[in-house]
Length: 211
Picture 1 (cartoon, rainbow, N blue to C red):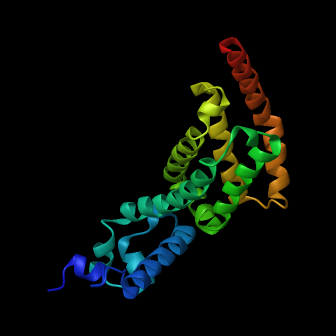
Picture 2 (cartoon, rainbow, N blue to C red; picture 1 turned 45 degrees about the vertical axis):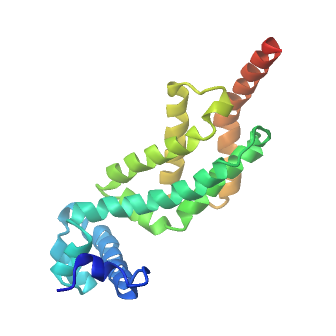
Picture 3 (cartoon, rainbow, N blue to C red; picture 1 turned 60 degrees about the horizontal axis):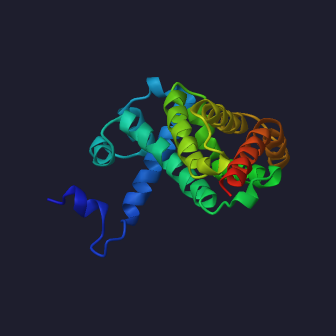
């Protein structure tokens, strides 16, 4: 009998194309059903019928619909963290200008845009709490890369920024935004730059005292 590991991978280690197609069918069925009926009202049977697969095939990949939901959210967050976190790791203190910070936020929004429909469907459903919690954690982890360069933000200040970033993403995927670059610039100028400017003053003061 073919085992789980045999089905999930070829002998050369690459993922089997058939498995990719099955996972795509499950994903597409899941999102369409959540949009139509809501997560609470869909069943594994609904998903398998829509994806045209057997229940046994579904359970080769996921434990239940909750496992499927969590892993879809994790996939979205993994992409967001990889692309935004990678950019933040290269940020230097000279990048802490309105345009520099706004560019980072804008880049994050554009990463979200690649999966905008997935975000929109999940954030418009009861499953929004799960995705929002995971998204908040990812935004916080991303900001941790530059936290030390903003005069060691307090937890209170950090929460303000994290909630603001998360709110921007949620608004973007549920509304039409014509010029996201300009909107990010305005957001940064109004809400974040004074905080970073204050951090720069504190840092300079400490450096002068040290020297």
